[in-house]
Each structure stands twice: as structure tokens, then as C-alpha cells.
Amino acid sequence: MTLDTELIWVLARSTGTAALVALTLSILTGIALRSGTFAWLSHNRGVRLVHGFLTVLWIPLGLGHVIALLFDRYAQIGLIDLLIPFGVPYGRVAIGLGTISAQLIIVVLVSTWLRARLTTGQWRAFHRLSYVAFAAAFAHGIMSGTDLANPVVAALAWITATTVGLVALRRLTLVRVAAQGALPALRR
Image (cartoon, rainbow, N blue to C red):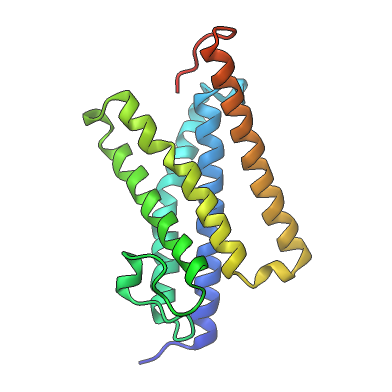
């Protein structure tokens, strides 16, 4: 039994896009929970629940994306390419960045599940890899996706990346100011 090529393509694109949206919103809600960037949200139970849900939602979306690509004869992605980045013949850098992003998110998820066994510093170091994972996932989408030819999709992608970048920059600024003693210490 073979799956229709167009169906596989649509599944790969839609699950990849949805995984990036879940990752983006997870990062934004995580920043909201742990900093003064969105002070009014930092103690909101709903934001905490959404953050946890989005983190778990990423798993089936990411898996769906990868499974669809394994069946895509054009992409030519094999099981080994899920472990070793930059080995595919098509879109080597773009696909490799996707592999790295997925691996980093897995590290972040595992560190979250093992949080009780890690020191706060260890957990923070692992958790901060989500920023690198987002950058790699975004670059993966930009470099390998075909939807950016659509001006609406391109605008949404760049607005999303800019928002995450600005919020992360604001977060880093608040951390530096707190470290200099001008603000109360931030929790993370």
C-alpha cells in the first residue's frame, strides 16, 4: 500500500507548521511564566497549563511531521537521518536544522521530566536550549518550506520570529538588569 504523494506532502507541511506554532507559543508562555516580561501573566495558572499543553502537543505534531517525511519519496529521509543531521541528499542544511531542532526539544522535554533530579542550574541550562531549538526550527521552515511564496504566510512567519526574538531580547535585558541589582532577582 502506498500513500498518495500529495497527501504525504500536505501532512508533512501541516504537521511541521503546527509543530512550529506549538513550539513558538510554548516559548512565549514559558517566558511569560518566568520573567517580568509579561508580569501580569507570570503567576497565571492558565498560562502555566497552556505552556504544559503546548509542550506536550509538540510531540505528536513533530512525530507526525517526521513520519510523513519518512514516507515522502521526494525528501528521501531515512531513519538514520533522524539521528544524524545533514546527511540527506535533498536540502542537507535545511533538513539537518530540523533534525537538530527536534533533538534539542527532546533534550528539553526529558530535562523537564527529570527536573526533580536536576539542580536548578542544570534544568535552566537544558531548558534554555528551547531558544536554540526554535531558531533551528524556524530556519528549517524558512529554508525547506515552499509556503513562504505566499505573502500572508511569509508575513505571519516573520512576525512570529520577530515577536519571539523581541520577547527573548526583553527577557535577557531584564535578567541582566536584575543581575546588576537594579531589579529583584528573576526566578529564572
